[in-house]
Length: 114
Length: 114
Image (tube, rainbow over the protein chains, first blue to last red):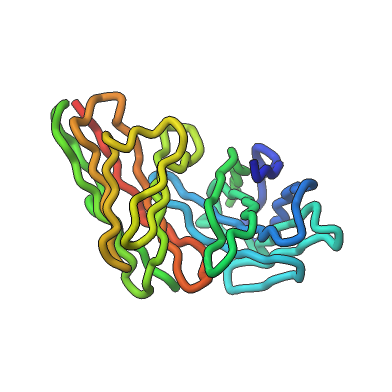
């Protein structure tokens, strides 16, 4: 089972950076790390993914520890619209062009205060 | 970014009715589509994986004769809940991936069986 561990909840203030941690101590060398977020009554939204190097996109940054046993999703300036459940997911390399099944845990509920 | 459209957004119907949910990838070819179910205050649970032109692979405990999945083209997959009963009421979400792109999700279908 591709397992990750995240805090149940975190809080932040608007316009401050948010660091969402994820532990994946049993990760194997070819597993990717994906982050999704879900707002109430919506499907999950892709945020970012990476393998070894840190990754940046318009939504967030992903910092992956050197030993790959943990990673941190960084929202540089939280807004009220960033309030969501954030899921950190390992995907065992399914081969070919597929990342394979996503196994969702309970995620981290992020609350953003105005 | 990749867009996945799911239709309808919500359905209310009588017990015993069959309900079809469509999932379309609008701007990419989805070699694989996934169907999830989410009950209130719970995380997403994968129901099945479908590859275009092949029979779907169902997760353990999911009745394939009750949840019929068709993935006839690279842009469309359908989930039919046959003879739906109140216990089938849930939030159904599809996702699609293709070309080594991460999965992108539809906005979900809220199914209520009376």
